[in-house]
Image 1 (tube, rainbow, N blue to C red):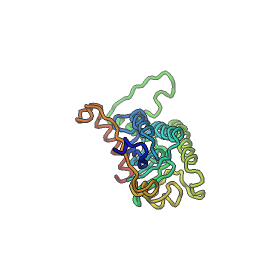
Image 2: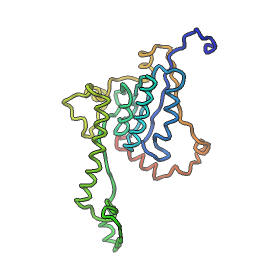
Image 3: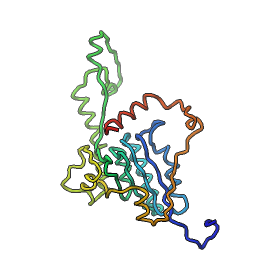
Image 4: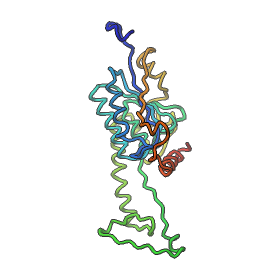
Length: 264
């Protein structure tokens, strides 16, 4: 009935976007393409007083992290809507990149935050192949085409190229954190060496703003009558019935490995 009485003031509306899981372009992951409709709806639904992000992510793709965060910042600026982030278990690596899209970041006493770094990981099988008498035959056009081949011994040139790839990604991450956190960052702290902090320690170094949970913090900021509106991703019919064929075991293992780095 309230919606049909124009002179009654509506309680503040805060759409809540849950960013749960690893970040990447796969079907299990958080990606800009999958989240775009959800984020657009959150900022366009009525006249929101704010948008809240609930983050629980061990990281993943640097590009997808950047695209998602950039979309949130663009809409926040266009709509003039503040954004608040609430970290659950972990906002590490790309997960922290997403948290920095908010104007303030709130954590639990036991939340894990940080890991501002970039990683390249692979396996090497050259000695195993030699022991088994297997000869690898590779022909390329372009000397870098077999770069970081797991079936051949790693070379100093390979290591140098990997570091050359990782450095600009790390620089981009650092620039994003500095741009978003600014003077809040503790100047003397070594923040960009991929270390992690727990709860209050992340507040002390300026990576987050305080200990706080979604409901009480939103009530403190927008009043006891604030309306929190969870925004869920729309799934296909196949996904609803657990029949998505692209949800591979390999993707599940990769995501499990990301969580395992933080004991989760």
